[in-house]
Length: 415
Ligand SMILES: [Zn+2]
Image (cartoon, rainbow, N blue to C red; front, side, top):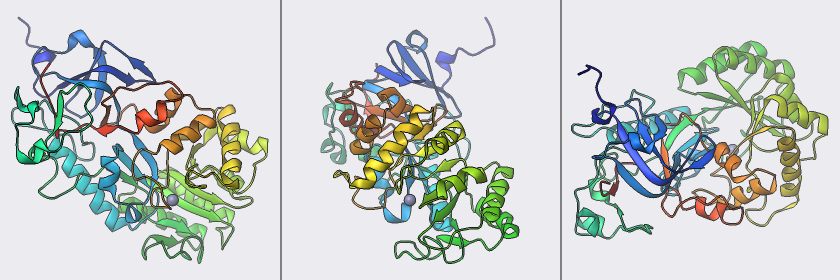
């Protein structure tokens, strides 16, 4: 006998299977997900999963879906999570509020992760709403469970799953579950600049940067407040940061291993962001068609967060066309796109937004590429499409909009 434990008997490891699993950029069958003690899931051949304790999901499992542009102060994040979004990036808000929300989300995820006799808690900051092996006892899926559970049956074509809110360990009593949150903290702005002139921007959600010398202090404050991104605004509707200040912000952020997201609005702002070395744009540029050489330059090293649906909310306005054309050319030149909606800005569905997905299709992304733009391969979260993922262009967006976040509140019969 060997002293090396059989992974199939390691109680710190969770095993999940599904009819299909989308991972690593493609839809697969015959694989299982092995969720390690650190919360990270990895697809492995299905034969590796133990017969006992493996949870089988009807439909498709995939890495947790991420919305890379939200504002927590302007939207109810618990609703967003219930709408299938496992994690969000907050791109501008009051740092203390965001830190409290992010901490609550991490705490919920860590409570949800381990169960009695099951795997250990995730390390702080890496937790997630990921599943445990706490499958309900045989028969409890029949609706005879607690009162709160019996009325909560959800879309489940195979009839094998049941949501039982009463047994939800991840959130405290009356506490709605949140998506995991990473955040930029304050908008870093020119004195008097956008969005300090907007009524929707809460006091404390922006910080004026007065000089290149002040840039380091601004980044240090954000870092101390727990920011894992830096958000800078460049809006020609008001004062904008001088280029040396913008560059100093980017340099200070990069020195702290933080990526910089720029809100670029108005002539010259995309070029300014690119030339300063910024990593992401918070929105696909929409105020004017960009010259092809600038788009090609951006595509060589920037990521654009899509936010196409804010232009018309389903009734595309002229800015939608401009943005779509810019994004199409950015994609043609090999640019990297992240799905983001700017939730909190206007009448957007607080969920996976099928209109944003359809717009990304129109911009030239294939369904697999859209999924890549919504996920991270090392995500500690898992999403689930109970009816199964279809990659057909016609039905893809609506199927994806049925996604749910996997956690211990989903009870399945053991395989
Ligand atoms: Zn925004």
